[in-house]
Length: 82
Image 1 (tube, rainbow, N blue to C red):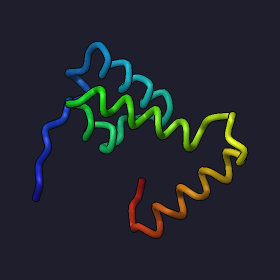
Image 2 (image 1 turned 120 degrees about the horizontal axis):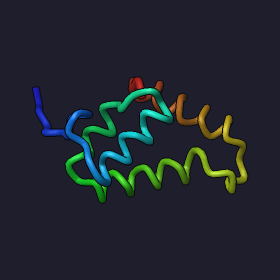
Image 3 (image 1 turned 90 degrees about the vertical axis):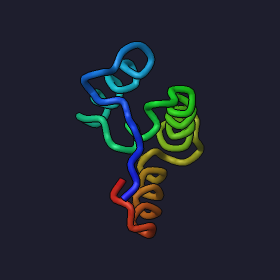
Image 4 (image 1 turned 135 degrees about the horizontal axis):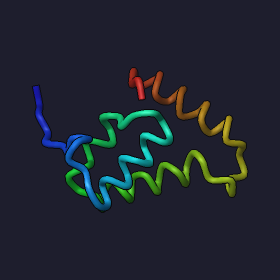
């Protein structure tokens, strides 16, 4: 099994601390996909910015519920629980 070092919730500070706090506010916890990118904050920031632009931005021509439905269907098709 592969192992990748991550920043635990109890050791966050600065930029990663803010990202973890936002994740908890948004989802109630810090999911593994966020922790996976925690050792490279610039990649995590870029990923979260991309995610928000695709799924939650109010400037999209598609309604948010539809964008989230597409994300759920793609995750299901890929057998991914995220």
